Amino acid sequence: MASTPPPITTVIAGLGRAGWDIHWRQLLKEHSAYRVVGVIEPLAARRVEAEAEIGCRTFASFDDFLADPVGELIVLATPSGGHGPEALACLERGLHVAVDKPMCQSVAEADAMIALARAQQRVLTCFHPYRFDPTFRALCDVVRSGRLGRLVEIKCHRTGFFRRNDWVMRKARGGGLHNVWGSHTVDQCLQLAASPVRDIFSDLQCTVTPGDADDHCKILLRCENSVLIDAEVSYCITTPQPEWILAGTYGGLVSSADGLQVKWFDPHAAPPLAMQEGPAAGRRYDNDDVLPWQEETITPVPGRGSGEFYDNLALAIREGAPLAITPESVRDTIAVLETCRQQNPVIW
Image (cartoon, rainbow, N blue to C red):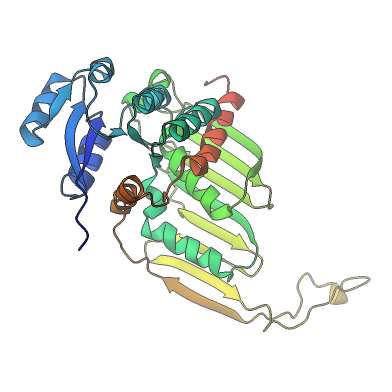
């Protein structure tokens, strides 16, 4: 009988909302494949809390940790702007690295991280939990089934009205809504499109929040396979909108609180339709084409969710299993976000 591998000794950098509530309490605390042996946190009260609840070593700064590193894996849940340099420093010291999204701030940083991970023979991945979301997986299943035909357009809208005033609304720390929600949204859309990006248009604005980073973000992408992506994340839109709308050559899909409403037809069952030559018959704008529409409401099935990220990461580290989220797959998202900043110099 094969022996159970020892838990992966893990350090969490940053004990804020993501580091403490998500990575520690929701995902790592009860996961038998991991043992948290250290945390990096500048706030003394949070270090005391970690010592009491986790019983691990604490470091007040990254420099303190790098001077005397512990563990095999580090989870970077620090403010977005430092992810690249922090990941490189940890890879240099032989640690496996899991970076919370966004993975970094530039393609140059991404390429350096990927190259160093390969050279050091260490695992590098990015925490994109929305890839494991049941609704997103159901969307992928519909697209891959071919029911919608050739995918034409993907719309994803995550909007509301919110005067946010924490660090996320500061440019200096790698904030901005494009980095926070935009990274989730662009990543999911690119996974659905399954194609490199050809053209990018973006509009980033600072509207209702008191910070200096964007709180309204519109990103339009045209992929090499002609799929059009319309991604919008905003804190200044009061009108409710469907989160997801997909359009294809055989039908479409829209999300709602009831699930995914899919409407499509089988092209083999559709009547033949030829072009009319000359003036429109009877001056009509329509015709007598009747398609054999089918409709279905899909209720996404809950699964392990974000827990699958750490299940897979443990197998990748201990057994060399393929990563569920490779840094190469995240690089395209980083390229889009970097271009958005370059296109909006008034904000960035």
